Amino acid sequence: MIALIIIAALILLIILICNIPVEAYIRFYGGKADIKVKYFFLSLYPRKEKPPKKGKKKRDKTDIPKDVQEAAENNTSEEKADNLSADESTSPDEDKPEKEEIPSAENDSPKKERSPKEKKPPLLERINSKLDELAEKKNQVSLLIELVMPHLKRFGSKLRIDDIIIDFAAANEDAAKAAVTYGEIGAAVYNGIAFLRQFVSMSVRSVNISCLYNTPAEKSRYDGECKLRLRPASLINAVLAVCFGYISNTKKYSPVMELFKKG
Image: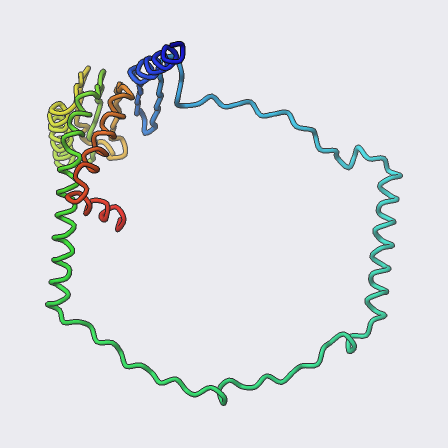
């Protein structure tokens, strides 16, 4: 009975841990990103740097007494002199081994006949093979989307993005180019927010897109920040659902694994 109570308590603890949300704060100002990830009261990223361990200081030559240094130098000079005298005593002719004549491989081995160049297949065959490869990859990608997309949508509904702040500025010395860039940025931002809202719960604090005429393009600004919130249980459920869908219908989704192997 006690063992069952302990197992039930562990299961409840794991469920509780998996349902505590992980929060990520992303800030991008002045071309520098600042990311902080927190889980409950723990800081997952960035980690605090550990102070370096105090190692033993290396002993400098200045700490060694002069008498010891002079004795060591004398010993090394005597060893070098002994080695030189020993090398001079040995004659160079005695140590050299006699060169053996190596038979030439050109005379013994027969000449290899050059193989004719392999002819390339006709152009139509190459085009057909490429089209077959593209059709096979298209089928594999469509199967991957079919397997992952429903669970990905469900996972996106569990993700939440809050406190979005966007502060962009399109700058250019040419007024026409600055206006065109301003329009492109505005369309990309608002369409991107509308698209993400179909899958992800999000709240926008402010969106500011401005146009700077007669200003160098280097002074364009792309600043912003947001907060992401996700429960680990949602990610685990999505991964398990994809794995179960693949295992339950392996014959149908087997080409998906071939796509990853080729990649």
